[in-house]
Amino acid sequence: MHLLDIDQLRTFVAIADTGSFTRAAEIVHKTQSAVSMQMKRLEDRVGRALFEREGRLSKLTDEGERLLDYARRIVRLNTECMASFNDNELIGRVRLGLPDDYADRYLPEILARFSRSNPRAEVAVMCEPTHHLIDRVHNGDLDMAIITHVDRRGPSEIVRIEQLLWVTSARHAVHEEPLVPLALGRPSCDWRHSATQALESADRAFRILYVSWNSTAVGAVVLAGLAVSVLPESAIRPGMRILGPSDGFPALPSCKIGLIRARAEANPLADALGFHIKQSLDNLGSARVAFLPAAE
Image 1 (spheres, rainbow, N blue to C red):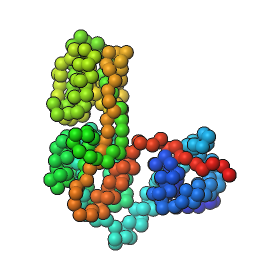
Image 2: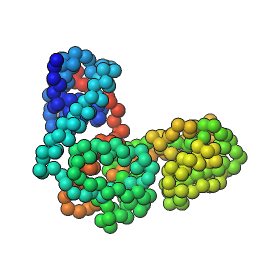
Image 3: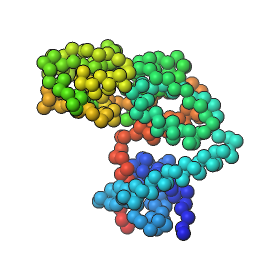
């Protein structure tokens, strides 16, 4: 029985996570040719093709997808094992803020990634609306925050872009009412501004019936068939129906998710958490698509 090489598996996971041989090479600190050679040896070792070509592109095969689950567990266990013997591992407390809807969707994966690499670090999480989080970062109350990026609120590192969508209950027809009831955030919410401006431009009558910062509460109202709302595509839940121009609801702008950091002295723990946030949220490249060098 052949033994799997941890270093090859780590590179394999990096390719799957970043969607690129080139970007994976940067993460594992190898040349692209070395990464390609590692993947060839890994395929030889398991006796299966892990990538299938589409011209100059390559994506995971079914066997590659199957190996990925095992590879993540093996690499994670190896990292945890080595961390338990490492007296120089990162220890301390890092303060992260994010809106509650982002917490519901993204926080489990972020914390899982971070805790595997830094099992003795503490993450203090605060859930508040974006404009409150920006103030807290600037005031030094938070080390970093995941926010909805809006140009007028200042710069942030864009880590994810999603389309905003109109949603209603799949079992009700509340969106057909002459005066459309809406469930939205408070008046300072940018998604609320986008929704109302779009309906006004389309000369569609509406009323704001439910107001909440809490995405779970808004989702419950939508699923109960009481109102229409707007959500980014990753927040769509079973039982929701997406509405479009054919339903009388004009297209909405995209939603940019950004990362902001406190301007303070170097913070290795915050740097490590920021890395895992970007890896978890990144959708700016093609998921699980790797750019392979041309065949020799």
